[in-house]
Image 1 (spheres, rainbow, N blue to C red):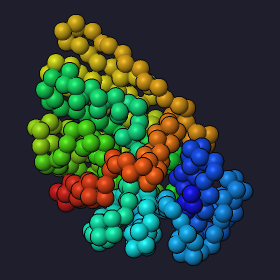
Image 2 (image 1 turned 90 degrees about the vertical axis):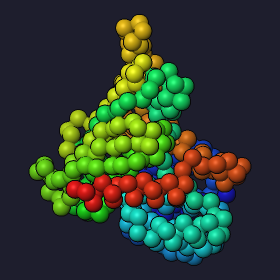
Image 3 (image 1 turned 180 degrees about the horizontal axis):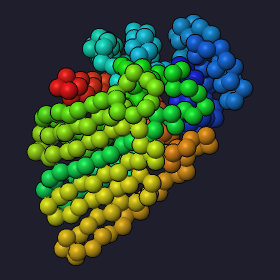
Length: 326
């Protein structure tokens, strides 16, 4: 299988690494606008580095788009026009998505928008527990997702990284990233409001804190706090049911259930791999591998991929709805 990875920054390299782990026989091509990144990818992974992606596109069986978000549509549209299956990283810009969705549907092209957190073992377990009904009526949740922006890519100045731009800022990007898995578990959003602002010393023209209040169609009320200010990286989640309370801390590799009937906490461990070398968060490489496997299964076995462009677009409209009220 010939696979083209467009964008050879940290995520593009991760996708190549994961593809080679899944099947060393894949013939992987790499493209980036920066020549030094093409040379690096070729040296690290022995990929076919190309300086003109459009020339190799017709020979590809699949494309992975790992560019900054404001470049996604530029590369996705030719894939859709040529009916070449593509995987695309998490979105934060809705402009152009309607046209892409129409083209994908007209050509019946496989389009797989990233939904990485759906493959995290904790999120998989939370989904299983919620569906089981053992928490009782779901009443509320609080969720804090934060990490200091300069720690995302400590090897480069944030001014050289798309997360320092207002439209594609790190904080703005993470809101839909988190809403994707939250709405997967809890369903559609009826209303979303909130506040945002630039409150830290970070030298970038961005909002670095988003406070979102969410009401789901089910009646569940949620509070989502996303920031790029927190110095100790955190994902901390507490879900209140009227029978059982669930807690998850990203750094603990377990869920906790408070069983009201027994007045005690139950610990539910889950398996997680260590972070890949060069990543300072305990992010499991496993979930990225499982995500690409799901895309390849959709391509080779016609298995449904758990996210769609329509869902991605809806999540971005909720982000914009929240911002419009600020």
